[in-house]
Image (cartoon, rainbow, N blue to C red; front, side, top):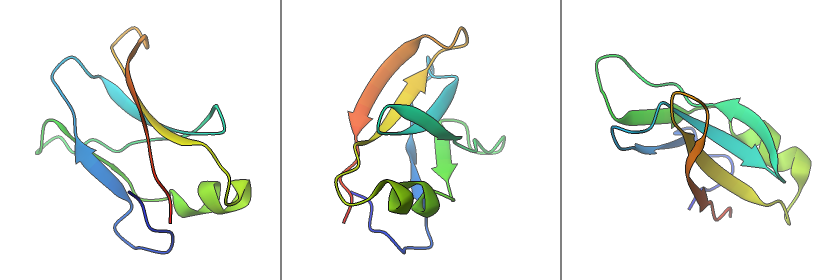
Length: 81
């Protein structure tokens, strides 16, 4: 779950087969997560608020993990409050 207006952004962990994590809003990629070199397997999207707010309350928000060929590995919905 993501709460609009929080300063922590969207963060989490991913598996070894994931190259990038992206934020999709209403089916369109809006941001690519930062992945710190010193913390393998972690991701952070610090700037999610503007994309979600513009889309409105009924926005479909998802995190999509892709491999090195940008083929989708996993897609999960994000609940927004």
